[in-house]
Structures are given as C-alpha cells and as structure tokens.
Length: 526
Image (cartoon, rainbow, N blue to C red):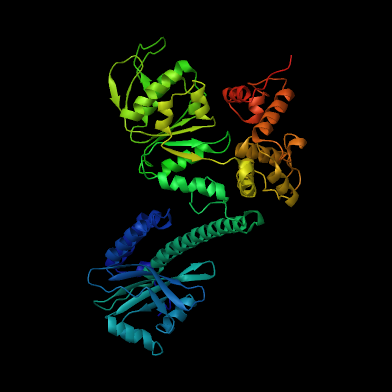
C-alpha cells in the first residue's frame, strides 16, 4: 500500500540509517549509467544487478504501460539465480488491480500476502503460485504521463521498507523514467526517418516517369534496354560469362562496350578479383608496353623503379583492352604471347612472368579491314575473336531510347540537385527519330544539357542540328555518319582535339575521330 505518512529520518535506527546513506551513495555511483547514453542495455543491466544485490531483493523489473493502457510490458528484468522472471507481457485481465494502480501513478508496497487487498484476487493468486511474498512497485512518470513502473520483489521472506527508503527508491524510478523517455524519443526518430525514407522510395516508385522497368530480364544492372537487339547481346553475356573464354566486344563508339565488359566479368568466377581497363587509344606507343607488361628499373630514361603492369596487377582477374584496334603492331605480338601461353616479359627484363588473366577486348573498328590494310595481326584477331558480342547502335534499338532517357534523367537530376523534369511525348518521339551517331553517350550528353537549361517542369532538349533529327532512310549508315562528322568539323573550323574541338563535341577520342575521318575519306577543302 502507499505509505500514509513520512518518517523522520532522524528517528531511524543506526543500522537503518547506515543502509539509507549507503543506498544514497550507490545511487550517486549508478546515476551516470542510468541517465547516460544507451549502450544496448549493458549499462542498465549493470545498474539493476547492483541494486538487486544491495537491497537484497530477489528480482527487479522495468514495466512499461502499452499506449492503450491494456497491457504491462516487461522490457527489462534481473533476478537472482533460482528466482522466476515474470512473463514479458501481462494483460490487464491477469493483473487488473495492479494495472489500475500503475495507470493511476500510485506507489504500491505489499509487505506480505496478507497485505494484498481483497479486490486484488488475480494478483493474490499469482503471488501464491509463484511464491512472491513481498513487492514494491513505483510509478514511472514523465511530467503527468505514466510510462509504467519499476518493481522489486522478494520470494524468501516478507519485507517492509521505511518511508525514507521508499523516498530514495523513487529516485530510481525517476532515472528509469528518464531512460524510457530517451529510448522512446530515439525510437520515434528512427521511425520518422524510416517513414521519410519509405515515402521517398514510394514517390520515386509512383513517379509516372519510373513506372516501366529499366532492366532486362538478365538483371545486368547498368545495361538498360528491352529491345530484341540488346536482349540478344545480353544473352551472349550470360552464356560466356561463367567461362574464362576470351571475348571480343564489337560496336560503335558510345554504345556501352565497357558496361558489357564489366557484365561479363561480374558474371564470372573472377568477379571478386580486379577488372583493369586499358584504353589502347589513349596511351602513346612509348608508354603502352610499360603500362601493359610493366618494366624494371633502368629499362628506359626515367624508369627509376620497378613497375607492375596491368596484366600482372590483374592476375586472377580480368583485363579489358578497350580500342584494341589502336594497339601498335609490335605490342600485338606481345599480347598474342599472353593469350597463347599466359606469360610476358617486363620491359628491360629477359625473365618470363606467368599471369592468369581473362582478356576482354573491344573495338569500334572493322578488324578484318584493318588486317587487309596491314594494321592488325590476323593471328591475334582469331585469338581475340573466340566469342564475339556485337553491341547494336542506338538507332537500331529506338524503342530503348525512352528507357535510357528515364534512367539518365533520374541519375543526372540527382547529380545536379534538380527535380526530375517531365518529358513531353513529342520530345520522346523526337529523340527516337534522331540517328544518334554518338549512340548512348550522345543521348546522355543531350539529356544532361537539357536538365541544365530546362527552366520549367518540362525537359527541353536541343539536338546537334535540326536537319539531322530525322534520319534520311535513303542514306546508308556510312553516309549519315560522314555527313554528321563533316558538319561538326565545319562548325569547329576543322579543329579536332582540344576544348571546343570536334572530338569533344562528338564525345570521341581524337585518335578515334581521326581514324573515322580517314575511313570515311573526309578531306578538308582548300
């Protein structure tokens, strides 16, 4: 029962006063654990164990009241060895009298079974069944809100606390109430964060621009498209991926050959090893041998230390040789040796190094024509062309343009910190009709430009030339490509490389553009 009147602490016996003072010291010692940062219940369990041992009680429980007040939830308990622990959830029908006392924020002290009120029939039956002989329950309050209670119990002998002791024990209740408030706030904040994250995901999902699936059934995440042409290429990736077979990826500039190379690597047993890329067109002939095979100290002027080449660094993994058609002839012979025997010699060394690498090569050149012109070794070609994968140009899979457009809009808008713009149906049709000589890379550039310049909620796009928007079906592909390159060269004053040059506008490497100019017989007028 709740105490009727406070006792005068000065009238306490010496042993009682000693216990009281030591209890105050214990509370001071435990206070940082009870009000400090939560460490996953470790601090709370330590504090409860110390209190149980000091007060010589058999068990201690933190009881939280459910939001509707119908249940008592035991969120934390500590008991001496051999002492029962109460059930985790107690319904009001099991403890109706105690639930009413807790809800009314009343302190309850049961000194013995005889002290249990007559109306507490269920509580009396429970105490007898479990051997509980005494109990103290103190409400946990946050302002006027009842959070629950903290209770201690005895199973060995009846017990009685003085009013002064109960007063000190209320401090324990205050500390536990603070702990519950902090935890509920943390839970509420986590819930609010999860709700915000869920709403963001839902908004992205419900956005009309993201309704269609932008992945193929092959689940290669970065390759977007559902056209028959792209599905056929992906089927080949799925077939060859698990093996160590050499792969040759063929396709125009900007079609995404590197994405396909990564898809092949990621679907292989080498996926946990490195995939190293070498752009054969970007490296000068004087450096490409060192880049691929490495060198030893003193091999050439400036070689002040040993260097590991890409093949050795990728041992156990994959080397992706992009623009393989640009590889000099003398390097082609060394590459052939790696393909045939898995061995190489570092620049300046006569020692042979064994490597275990898978080779994936890619080119936008017609290697058979390069062989006829004497610029590519026939034996290397057949070694590389074990499993060719042709990547279709974007103009041959116009139905994929809307899917690519959506993906680019989301990615670019997020990167630029701008809202995803809406796209008019006429804009989509305009983009589908364009010939896309720069393929997917050109589409991405057009979308990024459009996101930047669009001022309203609708996407504004500007294609390179209005005359090039609708493909002239009477022209061959080579004629359309030649026309587009020629117009770009005229607009840039026949500047190929550097800022504002034709290569930059066409998203091509300058050497690749020069190669296309030679192949298409484009000549600058006098």
